Length: 246
Image 1: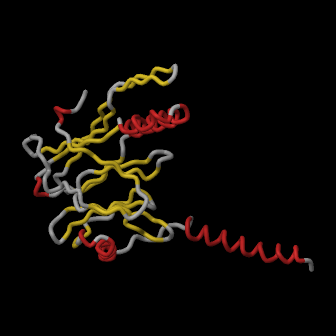
Image 2: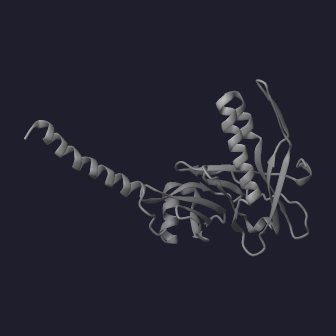
Image 3: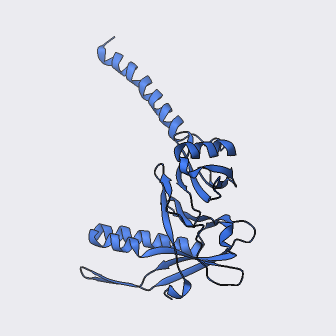
C-alpha cells in the first residue's frame, strides 16, 4: 500500500468526524430553555448587579431567540436576551432597566422586535412606539437622492402587564429593508455616505398615564447593563410627541 493511499485513508475519517462535530455544534436544534430558577442563576452569575429574584415570563421570538423579563431583589424591572449558540442557551444582553429596546434577530430578512418591561411605579397606562426617518437630500457623484421624513407609530397597552414584545409591523419591516438596500447600494459607490444613512433611521417611545398625559418613566430607565456576546439591539429614545417631526 502506497503512502499516498494510506494518507487518503487516514484523512477521510478525520474530515467526516470534523464535519459531524461542526454540524453537531452549530446546526443542531435548540433544547428546551432552562427552568426559571436556572435562568435567574445564570444571569446573576454573569452579571451579579442584576440580582434577579423573579423571572416574569419566557417569550420566544423564534426557536433560537427568547426575551426574558425579570424582577430583581431591589424591585428593578429588567430585561434579558437569550440566544441559542454552540448548543447552549446564553443571555447575550442583560439590562437592569426595562425601557423599550429594538432587537434584530435576522439581518437578512430583517426580523425585528421591540421589547420592554416597564416599572409599575411609573404608572404608564400606554405608550406610543415610533419608527422615524429624518428628511434628507444627498448628492453622490452625478446622482441626487431625496428622502422625505417618515414617522410611523404603534400604540401598546401596559394596563394588564408591564412587559411585552412588539413584532415590527409590515410597514416598519419594509422601511428597514429599503434602508438596508440603500445603504448597501451607497456603500458600493461611496463609503462616505453609509454612516450618515445608517443613523437617520431611529426609534422613539412616548409613555402616557391614564389621564393621557405624557410622563417621564424614571424607574424604567437605566444605563446599567451587560453585553455577553454578539447581539444587535438599538436604543429606543424617550421623546415627547410635540418634538417629533411630521
